[in-house]
Length: 599
Image 1 (cartoon, rainbow, N blue to C red):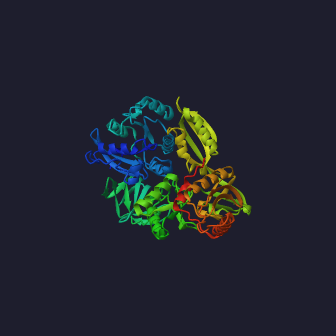
Image 2: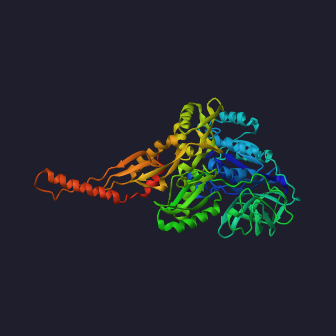
Image 3: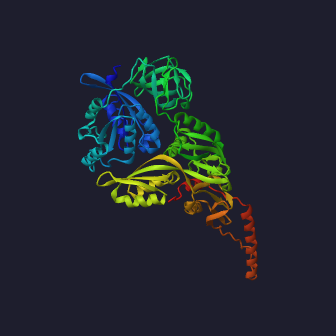
């Protein structure tokens, strides 16, 4: 295949700006799919992706387009838009030569648009700005064009205006891809060098690896080596990426395709790794390989304790398709046996929870999410904890470090005051503030991750009436005055409800959790104390009053003293019941703790 006729590109944008819809129109324009058989978001093959209108997993597809009497090969690599899946975005960008920067004409440039644009610039990609949704009544095409010129520094003649919904401008955009995105480089005569930009598990074929060839040629039956693990395999099948896999004899420098090589687990074919020939292969791997790092940790327990083995098998199968998911066994006095899982963020946690229920029919409970803390002990060692239950005795702790995130918030100027107040409540430190245009501002903060993971995004949307957007990246671990708060029900600690927070927030968070539990736990025949404590110090308390069930029916005749005597006797009985009685904590209580206000 002539490399000059190949174009490898991706679409980057903020969530809900129309990536998947534009991908559909490109597939129609190049006759990969027929308009009659149209399915919305065809590259989003999970039901969950279509329902939520988001892209969770990267996809790739080959298209053919004729221009100027030549047939061009266009390899589109679709990317997720949510901040949790930025690792998926980075590996897709590394395999491209250009990117379509998609901006919603009614919303303008948003935080993740800027973040992904910088990622693309870091990878030296040619950027083609595309203004989408120009058919909407409230579309501000000229304002969006001005934003793009100011922020990207690109000439207005290179900006394309389209409506991905009805196909307006898509043919011009296809020609722009051919004209402006450079052809791939690479020498077929050099040793083979390919980048794994995605991999997924097929229960019949094993792991299917999606690759971009940078140098050399790979053939069917060739012996290959993976750089990170030093393992060798033989290629069983090789080919191109269509709606279905199209088998071929070889892949050469500049091409995008797939390899099947009898690999048993996705973890063995790590995304970002380099593939080369087992014999006389390249000496250096492609740069930028890194392991996906979980940021949020939570306990996952089966709703029915008998489903523990099913949950273990389901997590194992899910991990075959989701290399970013990590899990290890843990146990809880309240919830029994389960697993401590690591997620990329709260959306990733929700997606995994939903997939476990839908694909494997396992209803689960998740405990209060936490983050990784570095505990510096008095004996000069450091302990890493992901679970509040593992917090050492405070007497042995010298300092605790928590993760700090670099946060960029883009917001209309009218709501800046609301945003500043919200971030101040979340222990944010403002670094700088700048105007994007006359109406919108970009504010940079440093905010602890523990303050972001619960309801920060919802509050951000609430105080800005939905106009604010956010992007965040990990910055560093920083010493902080954080404490472990235990929740006690009738004097007994419930380990699954413990959480770690800043000392200044301990009372507020503790009170919020006990008030939530008061509404969920049913009343018993005795009074129940719900308490939040740090060690032996009680911070907050809520009380569930007893059901009044004083039986005086058998007490007839005589004066009031007989009735008082009987009530006193029953009072003693209730006191004994409180000491030995069990409080039934419904499963909803664990879910309600997640909804407690952390403001």
